[in-house]
Image: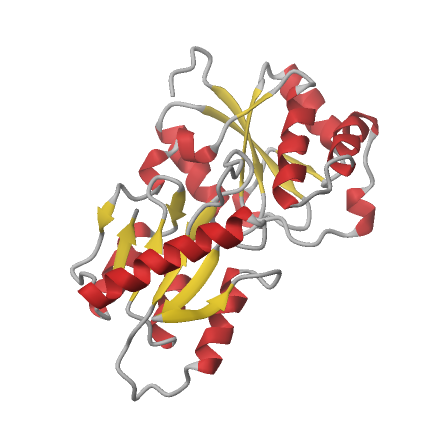
Length: 271
């Protein structure tokens, strides 16, 4: 992405993704102003500014002072404290747009971005800025899907996008039939449920885990990601492989993810 003035604000949520995005942007020559969301960011990130979730005005004022109009987001935001949600005057207009669009998570996310951009900022997807953190299309591992696996992959991709279209979730496990769907519990907890249901490790590994983006999903605010924990859960669940969206799914510790998958003969396919 070519920008003349390479200044950007990175709003950081939980886990390691903000570290990866920050470091990749800086390696590309960006001047990155890191804003940590209180209660979520890892203190080791050492952000330049810390705000509560409802204090957008504080961040906006500092960004304007620094000549920053580009914003990007990385890291999950879970359930905040009610006191952190309380909006300042700047954030009231954004929150009103969100409240008017409570048809589902995606519509609310799009409304929030529209509200932010109406105040003179541009929100850019971290995927567009950091393509090196995701996979190119293709098989990423030594293990390759069998003909039976390919049928599971096709069904899993179809079901993942189907539930995504209904704003239910994006992750699914298919082993000839649909074995589990992601709902409000999130991807990690869905996989833990699959592990409990497939505790018999004597059976031959079968089935796939798929996590695709939702049709029409606004990728500027929500980043799909997998990491070591995902691969470990797939191994423990006795599944054969992983299917993700190429270019739109970040891979945390990519080299280690591929190494672990190869060690346990798990395939990873980016579609």
